[in-house]
Length: 126
Image 1: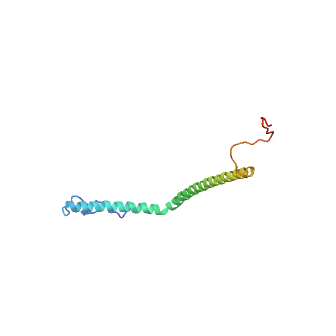
Image 2: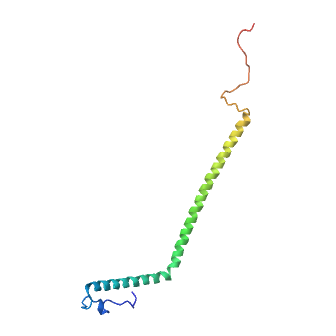
């Protein structure tokens, strides 16, 4: 605590035994004394924080930035990999369709296999 903080014993009005102060006034004075103590503690903490933590905070933020950049890079690589795989898949399907069209330009796909060879009819022709 700061040295300029009045102690409850140094001010005669802050003593509970003072006959000039009512109970309600004494409660208000006690609350003001607690508030003054809390404000002084806050002031000390802010003075401590204003001196050194900028470097600590910046170091923490740099580490967080590096981790975030790594995650972003991995996400971009994953998306690129998926897009590339899809392109390769689409190109292979197009190639298969082109090969089918070259093999069967008329587009007949009836499921029958035609064989070349001797086609003869057994039977009577008179």
